[in-house]
Length: 190
Ligand code: HEM
Ligand code: HEM
Image 1 (cartoon, rainbow, N blue to C red):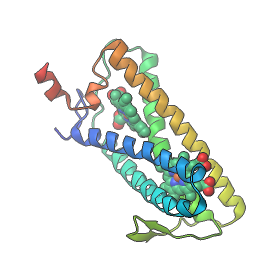
Image 2 (cartoon, rainbow, N blue to C red):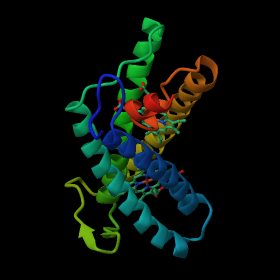
Image 3 (cartoon, helix red, strand yellow):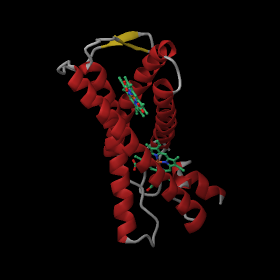
């Protein structure tokens, strides 16, 4: 079952979800390590990997959003209040926005830098910069945006994970299970 149904996510949405989740968490750790934990020589190589994985996340997030827009959304469990449903929808929309804006702000900050260091994407090709004004002030602006959006994403992901764990362990409904495998399989085994 590749596509979503009204009952559950399909394999494509599930694989997108977990691949991007792992990449974003790794990317956050890499960003933090290269900025705060290692010296400048090692940081240069790490930044190239950070830029490469960041652009990969951007491409996957755009594909995932397109897939989301042409698929039905699985129903939320009966018994959830209107507030909970609205909160879930807002958090998901926020996650989509942030997983696109965060890599874009990173790409903007390297594009605005007067150093003009090329982005060797996975050491396969040079990714062109965005057409932005280059100046120290513009670079500082986009760097601050990148850091602030990064923290925002971390907080929203934390809320999202706590909500998923609440559904699974306290409410004991199928919300987390339906993001692990399509419902038809889990239902037949219950
Ligand atoms: C989802 C994707 C991304 C995440 C989660 C992420 C996360 C981070 C984090 C946590 C830092 C360290 C911030 C600090 O505390 O100083 C950072 C720095 C940085 N990121 Fe990203 N990033 C992403 C995408 C990108 C992309 C696509 C690029 C460029 C193409 C990029 C370029 C940079 C650069 C150059 C820095 C160093 C900024 C400085 O000089 O302070 N990032 N990123
Ligand atoms: C960086 C990490 C993560 C990001 C960016 C993220 C993003 C998202 C997004 C955008 C959706 C909505 C999917 C859609 O309707 O198209 C979603 C759904 C979901 N996520 Fe995550 N997620 C992350 C990590 C996690 C983790 C660690 C868990 C489990 C503990 C989790 C559990 C779920 C569940 C259960 C759903 C389905 C919710 C529903 O049907 O209403 N996510 N996630």
